[in-house]
Length: 176
Figure 1 (tube, one colour):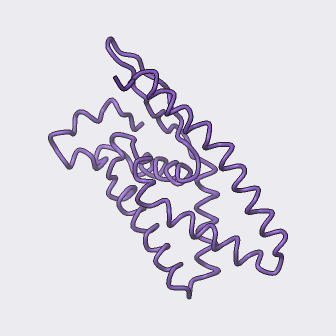
Figure 2 (cartoon, rainbow, N blue to C red):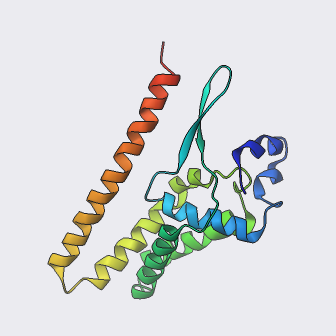
């Protein structure tokens, strides 16, 4: 599986970041996991060395069901809004992310696709929003209840993750 420990091998070779040594299935697992990471924090662990500690992303061992569900939601969002120019742009950007991260395999060798959520995450969020918006347009109370639940769940999941990263930085990399 993709592992960050192999990342140093490709530092002098830009093609080394392309996952050419990985199977398509392994890159697909990483990609589906990446989709879920647009919404939730990645699995991590702290690795201790002689003189420091490193915040390490756990490797992807199986298919991420949340990632599949979110991909399906984005697909529904595009299908329901396929004539909308913004939905088309979002769908193109998602297709581009699939090409870069899964077909080409950029970043797959290091297992660091979570870094690319900053580039591509907005398109996933927007198509998911469009799916909910269009599906529940005749049920505004239900729609706003769904938004409230989604925001609450995302906050409850992500705020502790952000706090963990901050605490890690304060503990192991103090400013002095």
